[in-house]
Image 1 (tube, rainbow, N blue to C red):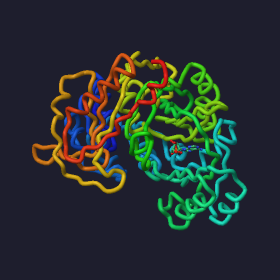
Image 2: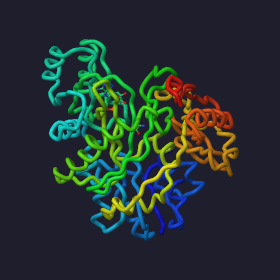
Image 3: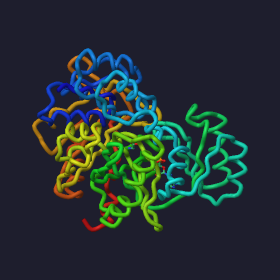
Image 4: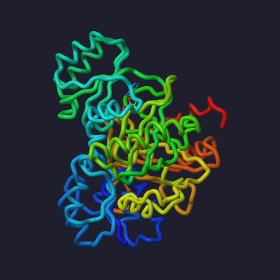
Length: 425
Ligand code: AMP
Ligand code: GLY
């Protein structure tokens, strides 16, 4: 069959790479794609929010499966548009993608169904939010409820900072309409773990765990970004934590969504924090993480098309999901200045070094083709992933591979996975 992937980041490159491994797939298209994806898929000049054009394309090319990588089109209802036209598509419908699109919705869902999460209140009135803050302990967390490119969460140390956060989100509309409603939440401490799960509306199968590094600078300093690097598996996600989450988080979330008439089909990304009182859900996303996909998918043994089709057909229980008994580390190469101001259009050299190496991957994010050259075209430029027998080995391999690549203003964190030195590996 032919497959269409919707999105343009490193995550979509990782999805395309997994799809390419399937013997069931003839041709891959990606809309809109990027400079690296064009090496394995035909990039199509349609943006992720042009739902009718995407569906027209899928119909015209007789696409066997469309995979939606990004959050915006999912939350906007692209899956509903495809389904209405009888097209096969992988991802949650609009009424289920709300689990990511509205943090207020997801908090209320967790409360109603006793899924462990931080104590909170939702507000759509800034004065009431301010009054509530007066009664709370600091630090505290203020979140824009809607989609804000992963940047709508403000951790506030003092009452003054918290009030400023409410003002900038609700009154000054720092994140636009995403801040019409906010969640004010108890501050939690602990290791963070991401677990991405395949879901068919009834059954849920968690993949191997991963951890992201969201801050721009070493030592978790600097601004929040879309993610500067990941590793998988997380040694902190031990059997005890896993069993707890299977019993108290994953299946209860599936059951809760079904009970609400919002069957969740697609990838449920569960962001967990391992607190002294046990694991709690920080957030849900309705798609693969970026750059979590870049460490999880290279470790998956199954044919991704079989798994995605089983999700669409409600037969996920027939799939034995398997991962390699190894580790992966992804280091993001960014343009210096990201996530604020940075330059584009710099030639990227050294990409050939990855060719023919099964344990090394260079996933493109902000790149584009410029004649015969590939040039930088965004803040996060590339994700360099390496496999290894252990996390330590994967990390050494990934950092070695970052040296193969060269472009002006190349920036990366030097401590992806470094916290692992604290634990026995
Ligand atoms: P979210 O998008 O809700 O996952 O939040 C982004 C990041 O903010 C998380 O990965 C955490 O690092 C941090 N965060 C969110 N909620 C809390 C909380 N209640 N306590 C401490 N940190 C939080
Ligand atoms: N890396 C975090 C995310 O994709 O939301």
